[in-house]
Image (tube, rainbow, N blue to C red):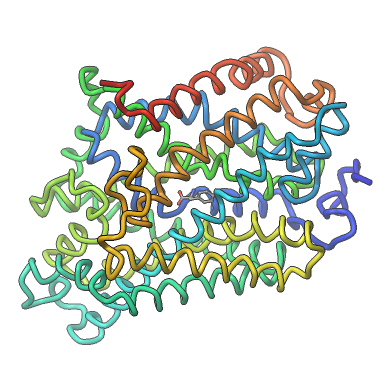
Length: 479
Ligand code: PFF
């Protein structure tokens, strides 16, 4: 039976002791899921690669008009069902007198979360490598001068290719990152996931603000603001819009069952519209501030803003070379990114774990281990695609995946296929299939806002997302 009171008990999944201990714990965990490598690594890279202002402004529009309504839809499905993502959808469908097969939307999501987890841990491993490199540098050179003193810039930029050249080390770091994630997920919702979020997210925000303020005084701040917020309409091309929508999804953790799962641990007294707004607002603020944190440093060092994924791992360490106390700033920066990545990876592991636990009636620890073992194998293939498997392009026959190694295939299949499909089905399910009575009881909206949300979920989200999916799979449509 589903609890309907506003007490703490209501936050527990029936038959288990799982649930957030408070509303703020849920908000911190969900913000922790949203804020991660997507904000610190992917957002500046995408903004830089897509020309800055037009991308950023369209991204903000996508968050408000598509991301936020889908986020509310996902959390309300989870809160209503109080079970793993597919089971939550099944319950809502059954109570609405509709086919239980709508649970496919969450099954696709669970698969998506598993795939993102596998390659996310690989990048998490790179972050650990940089934490180690800066820590070692701090110990050897101390606080005076910049990072990696006496070493030419090319050598610092070569750290990343150097890591890619060592497949064994890359897999080892990926495993370490995965084991840390596993440890907290195995400890459960309030004892592990919530613990990570409540300690690491505040620590993250303190470090983040300190580095941003520091960035503001490095000289390139005004240039960065102009770059990120000057709107040049001619730059808003189809591919730029597609990149912006995809980034909004990745960043808000949507379309892969993660937010349905986190919603299932929420008590009935929590207003989901309010919490969704806080989560989306915080995530977007961090992405924008990350841009304002990274680009001034890059500009001040006279580096190119369009270095793509290399921006965080190559340009920034190079910029830390020219800074006073550069080793310490660099170390703090990568520790902060590690915190953000960990609070996201726990949510990526939690979604499939909750499903395995429900489906096979396993203990949490056993379920966590099974999912992690699978993610380790797939992730190792992704890691090795920068190394021994570099020339292996297994899906060359399909144009969407042409010339891609395993890492890029996994990234593409999630952001361009599974996430949009999951979110289209979610908005159709909530907008058209589920009973209005159930939806209205959960969403915490009324009046004009409620009507507007319903309009977005019924019309704008499915239509806009279908367009994105088509353009993602058939890029020639935008030519
Ligand atoms: N939102 C995370 C980030 O920006 O790094 C990535 C992510 C986490 C995607 C959880 C999906 C998810 F379910």
